[in-house]
Amino acid sequence: MRLFSNKGVQVSPLALKEVTFGLRCPTFVVHTISKALESRENEVEFYEIFEIPGSFDLRREPVNIDEMRANLPRTAKSGVETFEPIDEA
Image 1 (spheres, helix red, strand yellow):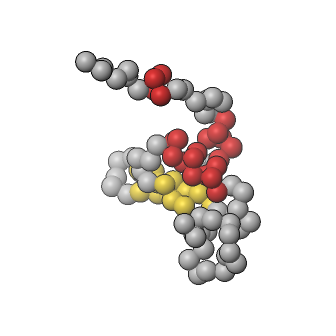
Image 2: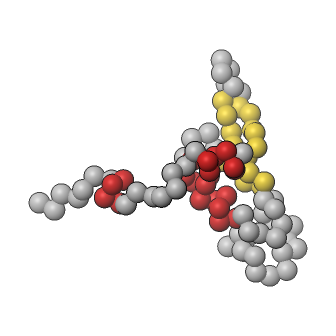
């Protein structure tokens, strides 16, 4: 928790400087983490992993936060809208 919090002196050698999201990380996770860390005094950089077509290689590229957020809905769906209703039978 100390790595994510704004509390304390923030001089730890373990201070969070960047986050790399994995190949199959959902966009909502990228959005949630980037939103939670956007107000930090020391900026955190965000990257994501992509496959290079035709090979087994991967590449890491910066996340374009503004572009990602522009493609997200302004409001969230309710749990009932997101998931099927629970059968109470």
